[in-house]
Image (cartoon, rainbow, N blue to C red; front, top):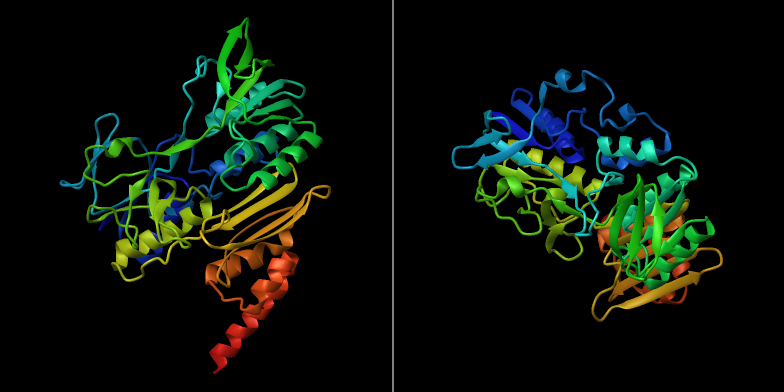
Length: 420
């Protein structure tokens, strides 16, 4: 049996390792598009700061890790997949046959259609090559423009702040991290950043970027023109699916998979940021671009590829935990609420404390927090289990900070039920 995994990020590497665990004798080929050993993009900010070397971003530190497991890592890009012939075409002309295929190609950073977006000095922060270029320009005191204050943008923001650059963040939405925060929480994060000396321009769009004598200037829709030594674009990503155009694999926002991570074509599976998998809270299928989901996808896909379709997924919990220059924000499940649901909110703007709980009947279905890490495990546990809170729902509507007590009461009630 020849298993081929396309993509060497967290999903691809974990899948290859679990394929070996489940099938000690199968042939496993892991295709890595970049020349570097498999690495984590989430570690790039630590490299930017200087906390780790480039080698510190590698997913597995032992040089012989893959060979010891009998995993053949091949550095090659895929140009197309022929699912009928079970063959992969590689750039350069080579082809590769497979028995079972896993697509774990992740996502690619995209740049908006802004004049000057491809100038030298305007980069994404999506690869080791990008990180090296950013380090060369992001000297202390240099003028840096960060386009985008979403999840990825805020991770990069922290690394840039640590490099002591003169940082300006430009975000089109009316608040920071809009996909995991409401207006109150997002603007509290903005205020926190401004207190740290970072300029944050929300509700602002970059209209053009120009270069003159090696210096950049960034023009916005608010008539501001800002000088820049470096511009970093963190305005979004898209799933890497272009090479599958003629494969007969169904693609929507990502590769459509079933509850076993199989695509619309037999013996072809997908995992990670490229897969449109099942959401625990809604039962719907969409791309959850977070590393914990990528790893869980990989484990399930590997099991299904070896043992068949015996363990359907109940869906993965949508969750985010973000550190923005020392302020921890989280969101879980249906953090934005649900029709007919109820909401509890605790706001302390002076101390940068925020807690929001979303209920459907007496079940906690979503939650978000800022500066209150003590509640993270309780929020995740209650949402993931769907535990009924009973009278504790009303108590939490009055005092949301009592969440740990509610969690403990729920656990004790569940234990009593199991003992009967």
